[in-house]
Image (tube, rainbow, N blue to C red; front, side):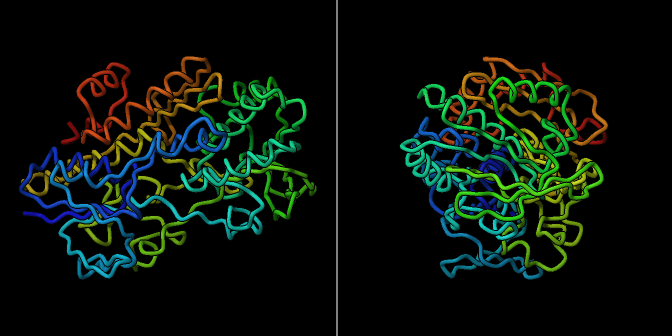
Length: 429
C-alpha cells in the first residue's frame, strides 16, 4: 500500500488524483492538498474579467467530489516539504506523510520583478487567478464609465502568452459590443521577438495570422519589449533590437492595463534543497521524476522546462492544458508500474493543443510535440474555435465533477487526430 499526496487542486492536481484512483484502485490512500476550498477552470478567467462569466460559473468546492472517489482533501496550502523525511506540512499545522509526492502547485506570480505591476500595486490587473480576474472586472467597470487608452501584454520572463492575446481580443470584442471601441486606443506589449511567437518559436503561420488579427482590430503592438516600471496611469516600456540592445524608451498612458507577470516556483517547493532550478521550478527527468528525490514527481506549470529558443528578451515556454494532462498520465503510469514491480519508463509526448478565444472568433494552435523539432505544427483561425473553447470549458468542468481524467470518447477523438498523451517507445503503451 502506497500513501500518495498531491500538492495542488488545479487542472493538474485534480486530474492526477482522479487518474491515480482510476488506475490504482481503492487500496492506496490519496490526499490532495489545495490552497482553498474551490477548483477553478483557469482558462475562463479572461471572460470573468470583462463580465462574460461569473466566478460561480467555472469554480466549485472540490471536497465533496473528491470524497466520492475516496480521496481526502485538505483546503490548506503546503508550507513546507521535508523531502528527506517524506512529509508535508500545511498552513493549519498538520503534517502528512507520503510514499509518493506529486507536485502540481502551479506558479508563484512574480509581480515584484517589475515595479508597479500586479493587483496589489493598484496599477495593473491580472487574469492569472480567479480572484485577480474578479478584481480586473471591478476595475474594468470603473474604466467603462470613463474609457481611454488600454495597455495589455506580458512582461519579460513571462511564459504564458496565450491569455494576454486572448484578453486583448476579448476586450476589443467587448468594447465593440458596447460601442466604445472608438474611444479606446489599444497597445499590446510583449517580450516576444514577434507577434505569435507564444514562447514556442511560433506555431505554423501564427505570426502572420496573429498580426493580421491585431491589424484588423486596430491593436498596436510593441515586441522585444521590457516593462521597466508602471506608475499610476502609465507604463514605461523599453524597446530592444534583435540583439537585445535597447533602442528607446516609451511612456504608454493607460486608463486600464493587464500585464501578465513572469512565474516562479511557490515558496514551499522552491525551498527544498536540490529539487528546483534557480527560479524555483521542479527539475524532472523524462519520466516526470525528480532526479534528486525518486519518489517526487511534478506536472504542470511548476515544472522546469528550458526555453524553446533563445530570444533577445527572455521568454519562457508555456505549459498548455493537454501537455499538462500528458505529464499527469506519465506520472500515474510510472507510479502504477513501480508498484507492480514493472519498468517505470513511461514518457509523455508533451503535445501542445491550445484553443485561444478572441471574443467572436478564435485561434487554435497544435504543436506535436511542443518542443521542436516537431512532427506536426499548425494554426487555424475561425469562429469554430470560439465555440470549441466554450464547449471545452463545460466539458472539463464535467470531468472534474465526475472524477474522470480521460473519458473514452476523448481518448479516441484525440487518437484519431494523432494526438497522444504517451510516447510509444519502450513501455509507453
